Picture 1 (cartoon, rainbow, N blue to C red):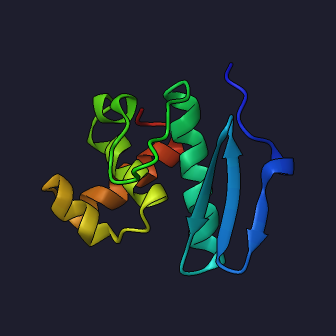
Picture 2 (picture 1 turned 60 degrees about the vertical axis):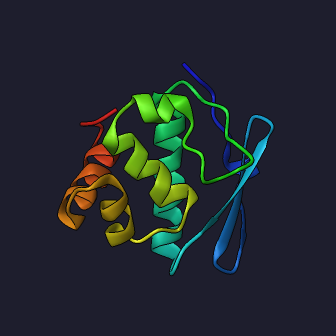
Length: 113
């Protein structure tokens, strides 16, 4: 089992959470606390299920492991790393907003990835 960052790596500052994954630090942002925590939780799932992956400095690049895992993984990555709206992600992946919502729900429930 892959060990991910623990609670000791969780730092929260008004609308932003800093989380460390191995040597990589990611700053998550959200419109409210629930969205912010959801982004961190989804990224934890993605990171663990894909057995970790390098996080590019250029955040516009999708890691190969994420891309190979399919649209649900890509949607999750974009939602977590880029504070993109469902609509923006749907346009990027050429699917509907409801499909993006379903992808994220499925990832949370363990039905995808």
